[in-house]
Length: 267
Length: 296
Image 1 (cartoon, rainbow over the protein chains, first blue to last red):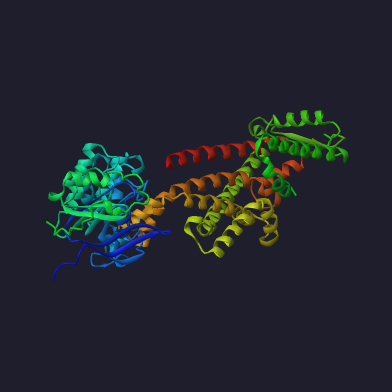
Image 2 (cartoon, rainbow over the protein chains, first blue to last red; image 1 turned 90 degrees about the horizontal axis):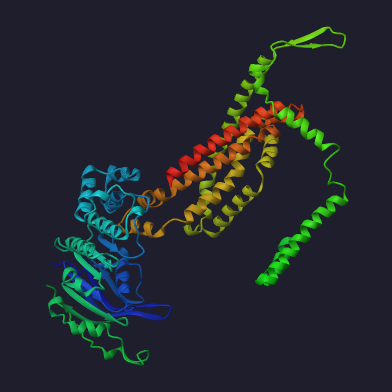
């Protein structure tokens, strides 16, 4: 029996207050794939991610994540890295990382977690996750005393302890310096490393695509424009995606952009 | 009346003209108060205020506790014909008064401490009902807000007078009076700190798959606890000040001694009592400020 798709969208539309934000005729992401979503601002990239996270509901169509309707999922199976999800300001970096492991705790350990007491092995795991991101000396520091880049790394370390089967990352490296960008990308990649783990990310910096993705999806104007394995991605396609539409675009059909839905067969 | 005035004026209050109009209304109110008081003959300073002031200040400047060391050991009371009526050891009398003062101070502290704690406990569920971001059912929210507003607007002394009639004289009435009034203050402060919670952090904890109890202990509690402790110290400190006058209405503590000293015109004893009050409040104030700064 084959594993269900990590993501399966069938003729999905998202409208908010009568305005169409996203239309996806069909999208399959198989378990183990690393998919990047690219496109200009307002294209619907974040809406797609929020749809998969269950933060936005589809107006029409079928959304299945890990083989189930979004709202029937166990939350810990999907890891979120997006704006609007913060660290707990008064907890230390280590405690924020340990929050990721809460859903794993059973029996007496679950009760002890109410007092923020954790098994020693878990604490070592959290410290290891922080150390791998270069934050070994920040473990005991309160989250609200960390820099923006350090907070993002702590959020990634929290995902490492959560160990989700599907990671949804919305612009995970915005506002990070080059070395931090590299570390966060490596950590996200490592998250998707074990068999069957899937990563879907919204990426602005196209130079990061080879790091984060085996497959790239272009979105513009709320419509899927193309869907290609990374090896088949030519620079021209990216440029066309970000190129402003010609005058009168407000009424012009979006079909002026190349529309091709190439269902990549994974890697 | 003033609300009607304000609502009638509010639209015009934009701009300089509106401000001048409001200032004129305020000036008229102040003049009206002064004029009516003066017309009723109530604006007087008594018969010889200057002499009274000098006399009171002279008594005040020699607090009674000094007699414990410097008072006469044999103060003789004699009748007009010279017969010895009574001999008093002033040092002993004042030492006894100081011991009584110590006990009264402890009672005041007990009233403030237990009253504040009871108020905080009572206020917590009401604050959760009143906090807008928790979205309690409308009826619950209105009821909680109503109870808190009523509690806050009735003075501790008024609660005390009513409660002395119900539970009798003594510290119990004081504790309950402090609790009922402070409940309103706590409720407002607690609700405000719940409303200032970082919902993004709570959403993030929930998104990891944590149970509701885990979300509470990891997302809500760590953010809210330091603020609650800080508010508690603040109101507790306030209540120590407040409970020093509760004795005036028979609820025990320093206020009882104050009312005795005032009724017998013993200004030197009043000076001693007030010194104790100032020392107590200042010491607690300094302590609670230290703790609150450490909590930030």
